[in-house]
Image (cartoon, rainbow, N blue to C red):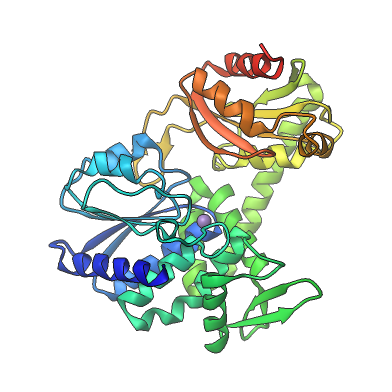
Length: 402
Ligand SMILES: [Mn+2]
């Protein structure tokens, strides 16, 4: 399993070394796992003599991928996403570019020999338990050159950020990189009553890894349109600085100001209600924060007195028609994020109410939208601008058993 993955990585690395262009374009996610992945790959490819161009994406939007694959003869690397859409990347690529996928989500095999899907899911490892994208990227970097062993602690930060623990402990490959970092004197593991706590070793004293991964999530998510991801990658490689601290403080203030303004709107009656759902639309008012923030806002209010605990909660946000590093891209789409109150969570767990993953993707599909991450208690999809009310109606039809 692991050996087959390492063999496949080795093969990809040989191809990359022989590639005619000494430039690597790295596309990575904007959460802690994605930022650490981007940092590890950047350092590894630079050490290998490549010029690196890094792009941070909140999602591998088809419109963005189309632009990326208009190129030819490039070395393209995708980290912490794209494992599942390897067939789509294959269709877009058609042998034109050497494309590597270093993801850990549920994956599908590539259909283009020039698209190398190195997602451990295809090699029998579990991305939601054994191995994060950062650890996958670390294994790749270490296979490329043992000198990259010094990146182990960065990989561990990503693994902790994704939050896949068994009894409070990292396991399998994620645990191994943490232990490697401990051996190098870069990390400490403290046993707790239940599980473990992870710290980065610093002259200033140990830094809790959970704290650092939250910090990276803030830079990448809230700061997505304001250079946050670049700062996040720098923090991974060079540590926190007064400059990154200042940016983090500013971003927290931005988030608080924008969230408070939206709470005021809801208090003033902006929340609409149907028999099973309560919903609101923030239009473009969360900008310059990233699109993940609509879900974060729903989380922030789902158990507050603004909300009817007996109805599902839905928030809409217009997806900005721009991606940092790509300029203007016309999406014309809205994102819907859904959450539930503690009361509804109990109802869903007891089987008395439908989970979000049963009706939101179904309703979205009826409107030609795109379903991405749908779980029982959290879910998000996208539909064309203007279809918001219709989407609510379709969900109501399903919930009312029509
Ligand atoms: Mn991840």
